[in-house]
Amino acid sequence: MESIKNRIKQTVAESIQVKQELMNDEHILRSLENIVNAMVVAFKSGNKVLFCGNGGSAADAQHLAAEFSGRFYLDRKALPSEALHCNTSYMTAVANDYSYALIYSRLIEGIGNKGDILVGLSTSGNSINIINAFEKAREAGMITIGFTGATGGEMKTVSDFLINVPSTITPRIQEAHILCGHIVCELVEEKLFKTEIEK
Image 1: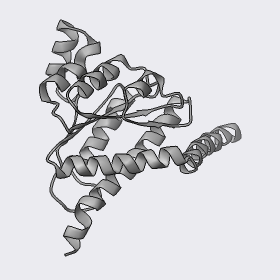
Image 2: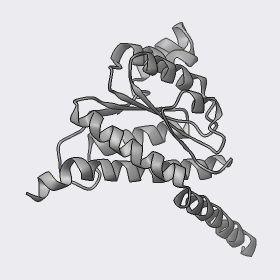
Image 3: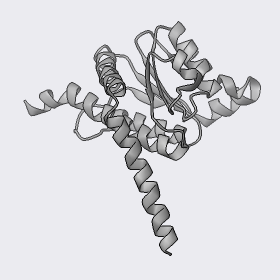
Image 4: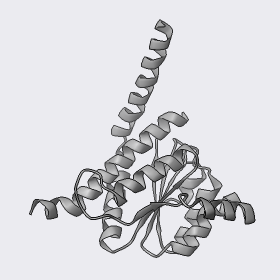
């Protein structure tokens, strides 16, 4: 039993260490600030923020989109935000008829507009369907935001803003993605609505 307790403590300590490194990384802090400002501008301009990921990162993408389209802390109007994988008929059709690598880029081709934002979550930074979507998004004049692990992978070359969590351990990266995502959602909501609600 003691060995299990030690493993639990070790895992918690690893997670804390990653978050401490994030907190002390000036480049990542500036990137988060820039992301918040970019999303505020996008929403104020009537644009939308879209999310995509695979596996657990797809769940995180859906989670963060819901923080905008639903609410975070404040009782306010909904914001236009969605995760791209939520239509299973579309996903399975495109994966079957074309390729899984095109599931997100084809949707961006259909609904992406200049000034929209696409956030891609990938612990490796090498998810080809997200890279393809980012390339298509850039062609459309969208802003691309990558949430990755330490190296940034191939996504670093197609991301306008990159949050490359200082870890190579998948669950620690995903935990930090949600932390960073929650920070962004909270600050965007606050910048857009707090003054208006307090009046």
